[in-house]
Length: 275
Image (spheres, rainbow, N blue to C red):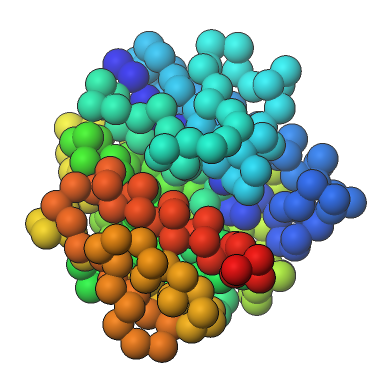
């Protein structure tokens, strides 16, 4: 039985500030160790429940955060970029379930710790078939393309509420309780890791009760950018409609095609100053 694990950093216990998430941050090295330890806890729990192969995708920022020397030796690590499926690279229909570890609330959540959707500098909000989604929702939709359910999600309580509405069957672990964008009441790293280990084991045992994210075709992605010029650039992609102001829309029947177009939108939005 194969389990896929996508690991971000903002939802990891103890992480509350950009100093934890950026290469130049004075606490980044400590945070990436916490991130690796939470990944290991998820791996250990899955293996205890019968998983025979684990693929872990490093899914934060530049996609080179997890410490290979400290990662569980039996896990395969997807590291580096670019990647066609970004945070979900390595996933296919051979997996029984997927975990989202260290995730965060979507852009626009006023309370979630370090809340954003892929690019905080350019993305104001995202809707998939009219439903507000963040990274967890979009990645759950990619998993659903392959028929794979999201079995476990970990992060702050704002994310847990988001997942309860979106994927109510998934196991959830709250690693901290948000007080503001940069403040939280945190579990200790060791306590969070223990909760993740137990929940991962329970999630694998409950896979028969899990469902893939419901995808209704055609798929319609609407993106609200921070600035109208970013929407204007995105509308240069064939098939992307500039609705008004900072909003664009893309419609397709293929989630992987939608993901490719979404990546191009993000890349264009990062480079608007060079156009």
